[in-house]
Image (cartoon, rainbow, N blue to C red):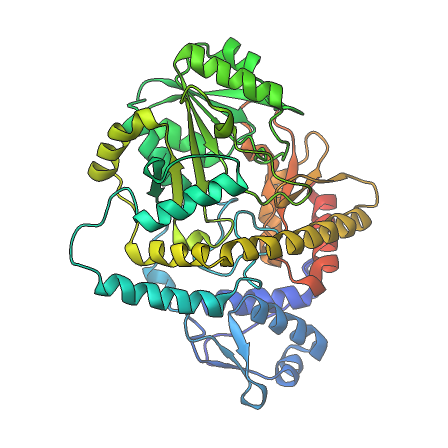
Length: 471
């Protein structure tokens, strides 16, 4: 380990020694003081240097390996991975990151309890690499010309067929537009329908970035509360009777997890038809229902052409694809075709071709089946370990979707807990940030997709220690 980098530990600190060592090494790797390929001291040497046990150093190194910051090479030692590139910290600009409690270290390995990212350890990377390579070659050999701004025709056909089977939504490929994820779809909707200056309903609680996106599109946002049956349509009419848009998560409400009741679905569709309003159905988890069969899409009940169905591959394949899709009513095809061509054409062809092959060869359905089993087991493990660690002090709930919710008492500082958890490699999301209106319930939302199974019990115990300190 080269100078001037040194590690110091304090036995007087509340933070465990292994965590102090891990944090020091992690920060040194990320800011470039430890370059790619640098060899770390052996467990014995570093333990002797710091006056700690070898097991303490081993725990710190194993966490770095789990985070893919270092790699163990046996007799060749433990080395910093080569792929990490940095500029000196003095040259790094201070970035204003969107909602830091939702995002942690872009383009790095997800942290424990982080939401919105599928399991990194269970994705078929070898298969996907082969498919991506074939797709890149195919795209490179394709005629040189402008691609269809609505998306590759083959991918649109595959998505239409998938939606008919998995979501009960019958549509033609012509109704499917390929977008840059959910955000790209929402931007396309607000532009094509010219909604600037109008009001949108948004569930309360609801995804914070959706609220921000609507406001940036020049819309006023009316927070509409949800209850055990989903969004309260009658309350929405009372609060914003002239709204032009409603953005909802009917399949599994984000972040509470309930499915929108049939009566509420019908009321929402009746409101949209009568008011001439539009509904954006954010089907962010698609069919990833961990118990029972996912409810059909809201758009499958739409008879008046008021629902715009949005899906994404971020939770099922990878957010790095930045790939989603939008299904629009037939009457809107001309205006959305113009908007896509002018303002928001589909993403790059190689990614579209790869997802097409992944779906066409049956890999997508098989992958979803495997992920349902894996996520159900991980959710159950987190619920059990968190309840053991909580000892009845707080309520632990399987929140639906791919998360577990820790319900904190009123006045608890969920944002403080989330900040204090980060040095331990834990990334719970504060529940309060999802709410627009006061009083904001306090809690933590724990993603269950990316866990180190041998550390679930200790990670849950550590989080509950922080809840005890800051709750």
